[in-house]
Structures are given as structure tokens and as C-alpha cells.
Length: 381
Ligand SMILES: Cc1cc2nc3c(=O)[nH]c(=O)nc-3n(C[C@H](O)[C@H](O)[C@H](O)COP(=O)(O)OP(=O)(O)OC[C@H]3O[C@@H](n4cnc5c(N)ncnc54)[C@H](O)[C@@H]3O)c2cc1C
Image (cartoon, rainbow, N blue to C red):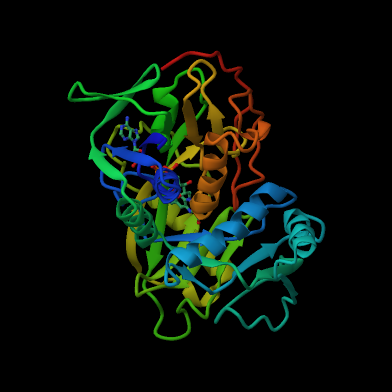
């Protein structure tokens, strides 16, 4: 029976461990924290699942497949509320997304701004149209990561809570133990770049999530859809499970140390968020803040994932770079990774350890300002 060690119990690592264990591998899942820890990028209550990715078909297909796999895992994890995109141009990213969705047969509708009834309060006079993905929705993120980890353990995986570092083709644990397996997957989120310096170009940034007290009527999700304003760099959803109305910025926050404590939130972003709410959802202007949290993005320069074999250690694979949009893909990404580990498909060059040109097309919104492409120099961490 083949064996694997997966380091990192965020959504990527848990999905991979679960899929490998389901396929009969002997799996050891290692993490410095528990699988639903707030310090991991996968921490927190909700994540959007959308299939729109501009013209990037791979991600559209992956999100659609992941939707099926999430529903198979536990039907209650995905909230079927739809995702609405606020398109500022007729021929922009949303129109490109719509073409791909229609070609794939994934449900999509163009809605008129006039009389738009899906939000209790809405102002869209700056928009060309609203694109609705009715089959998209919101994942209950904490429960989803726990469910994956739980099923991996039920399927026979072993969880080791420890900090690890690469030691050629082995995993060195902080207590001095060395673990070996046929395949080792490092799925270490914001820490991946530091574990493999010179190979993986990643930046950890502080991101903030704001939840506002839900007005007495009309803002529950569902039926209120999740939404994203690609060119405005904001996204959110209504009140899900009584947590409050979520409005978050996808613009990059300041760079942070993955090993440091998560820094406190900024009052400046709250004001910018309130300005956006007053503009887009006038009835929410002045709504009191219910809860605020900070968390980490792990950004590659081009917002594309990293899924690559180590150039000098052939049983070692590096997986990460979720770049603020990875969560939804977890189980589908795991299917792809396991096929790679089995040698059943070829690695996608777009996910390779290659110089990357800055770009943000894959994210829901925001801007990545990395002017240079740094050539990676192979180095065994
Ligand atoms: C605020 C916010 C909103 C987001 N919104 C969305 C969204 O709406 N939709 C969406 O699809 N995605 C979204 N994302 C992105 C998504 O959550 C991430 O891309 C995804 O969770 C990354 O998962 P991961 O498993 O790669 O990393 P992580 O969840 O960070 O997991 C990595 C794990 O590796 C462990 N680890 C690291 N180094 C070591 C070590 N040396 N030894 C042992 N363990 C180690 C860590 O402890 C951690 O548990 C959002 C992210 C944030 C922060």
C-alpha cells in the first residue's frame, strides 16, 4: 500500500489527506495547529464558492467539480444562495466569465439593474449589468475543513500535531523525529515560501473581514445572494447563521510575518467599507459593526496556485498559493493532486515553480502590485 505524509491541515492539506485515505493510501497528516485554527488561511466561518473566473477555464471546471464534491461530503456545507457579480463594463471580466459558464452549461443569468430585487437595498447606477450564478453559494468554511479532516481520519489517516520542516525527502518534526513516505505533500499555506525559499514566491498579507449587525428585515442569506464587485475590490454576503452581514475588501493588506500574531484590524478599512456600503447598499449605511476578524492571504504574484513536484526531491510535492480564492477548490484540487501523485496526469505548467508575472485575474477582486517576476532558483529546503 502506498504511503503519504501531508504537512498542512488547511483546506488543501485536509482535502488531499482525505482523498488519499479514501483511495487506500496510508496517510499521516501533520500540522502545527488543529485543522480549523484561525491562524491558517482556511480559518473563519464562510467562503464564497463561485465558478466565474474570467476566461480561466481550468478554475471554472475545478470550482464546478468541487461544488459536486462538497455536496457529496455533506449537503449542509454549501449554502445555495447564488453569487451576484457587479459588472462595471459590458465587455469586462464578468462577460468573459459568462461566456465560459455558458459554454460549460453552468447556470448563469444576466440581470437588469432596474428593479433588481435580490438585495433589500441596492444602488447600481454605475453598473453595466449584474451577472448571477444561481448555482454558486457560500461554504460554511470552518465546518467544511473539520468535515474533511474528520473523514480523512475515519478513512484511516493519522493526525500528528507538530511543527515540521523539510529534510530532503523526509519530514523533520520539532521533537527530532523523521517521517518518511512514498510521497510527501507540503501544503503549508502562508508558510510555504519560507519552507522552500527560492522555489516558491509567496507573500502573506493581513486581510480583514467585517460583519455588520443585521438589519431587522431582509438581509438573511439565503435568500440574499453572496456578491462580488470585481473592479471595486469588495465582496460579501447577507447574514448567514446569525453572524451578521459580511462586507470584506479583497484589496491586498500589508505584508505580514506568517509566524507573527495576526495584527489588529485598521479603522481606515472600516471607513472605506462603510463608504462602499453607503454607495452600494444604502440601507446598510450606519449599521453597527457586530464583529471584525483579521486573517492571512498567501499570494502568488499572479494569483495562480502552486502545484509542483520539487525539482530535486521527486517524491516531494508543493501545493499552495490559494491567493485569496483557493478554499472552494479544495476537494477538486485534491483529485488533481492525487492523480499527479499516481502519475496519471501531467503537471499543469501554470502551477509550476516558474517566474510569475504579476496579475490578479483569478481573484474575486482587488489589485496585485508586484512589478517584477523573480526567477526561482532551485534549492532543496
Ligand atoms: C479573509 C479571507 C477570505 C477568503 N475568501 C475566500 C472565498 O470567498 N473563497 C475562496 O475560495 N477562498 C477564499 N479565501 C482563500 C482561502 O481561504 C485560502 O486560499 C485557503 O484556505 C488556503 O488553504 P491552505 O490549506 O493552502 O492554507 P492554510 O489554511 O493556511 O493551511 C496551511 C496549514 O499548514 C500548516 N503549516 C504551515 N507550516 C507548517 C509547518 N512548518 N509545520 C506544520 N504545519 C505547518 C499551518 O498551520 C496551516 O494549518 C479567503 C481567504 C481569506 C484569508
